[in-house]
Image (tube, rainbow, N blue to C red; front, top):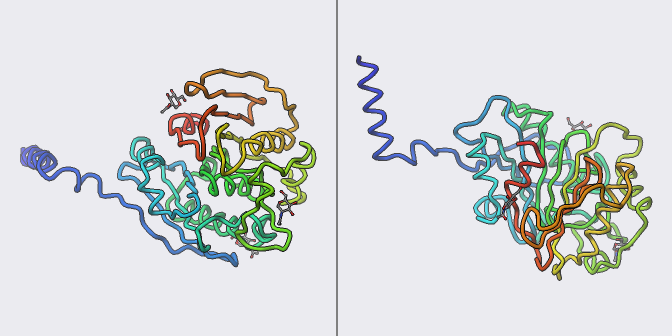
Length: 298
Ligand SMILES: *[C@@H]1O[C@H](CO)[C@@H](O)[C@H](O)[C@H]1NC(C)=O
Ligand SMILES: *[C@@H]1O[C@H](CO)[C@@H](O)[C@H](O)[C@H]1NC(C)=O
Ligand SMILES: *[C@@H]1O[C@H](CO)[C@@H](O)[C@H](O)[C@H]1NC(C)=O
């Protein structure tokens, strides 16, 4: 009886000063063991109703953004997904001026090369260790510079990632800097002039982690046809790259028009590569939480 009354009082409390008590979870900065040269910050969001052995989604921001502003951006609805489904989200924050990710230097474009991807891999390992995230259900998403980094992470740390859903990026290794510069812009790539055979693009990925022969994340690649920041040709080049890595052809095995939205087309290349081309959409294609979660199996 006493327990029953206190339950009622508890419910009354819930009703009156509800949301703060219930939704206490916040984006939190975390100090993590990081043996990379690069020192991006780590932020984590553990929802109040976290599931046991939670999946982990790494959400990578664009240029001129940060973990906290990306977290608050309503077009990047991963907090909502985390609240609804109980998975953890990890938000790396770029250390570079202008906050683009370094996808141009050798240290980033190689497994354990010391760059941003190595630091992010350290964050993933720490999230598994400290928060009990499921190491078999680690996913990566990002837009623009974050989309580029998603491709680079897939190439450099394939053993850690199950699936990637990236928006409006460029192929892994496309933004390379010939002088080795860190976080450099590359006009040839952004303008869509970096074109190569599927084999050559596949080699770029394989050479970032020589000798690796384990599983690789399945790749979902979104791009808009009206992208004037990262030319739409980058979509074709990225599809070439990953179809080659997975040893499948560049003719879709199935296509769905007007899916997942009107004027978008979904092309499947076997089970591991999916392209979604958004006709009339510019930079950057807005995240579709539902479609990315489905790709991740969440
Ligand atoms: C950095 O730490 C990771 C995770 O513990 C380890 O696998 C890797 O070998 C280390 N890399 C270097 C360059 O020390
Ligand atoms: C830009 O990237 C391409 C590969 O996509 C590379 O060949 C070229 O050297 C890079 N440009 C500069 C200025 O580093
Ligand atoms: C996102 O994709 C789902 C299918 O996965 C679709 O039903 C939904 O309409 C899309 N969302 C938006 C905002 O278009």
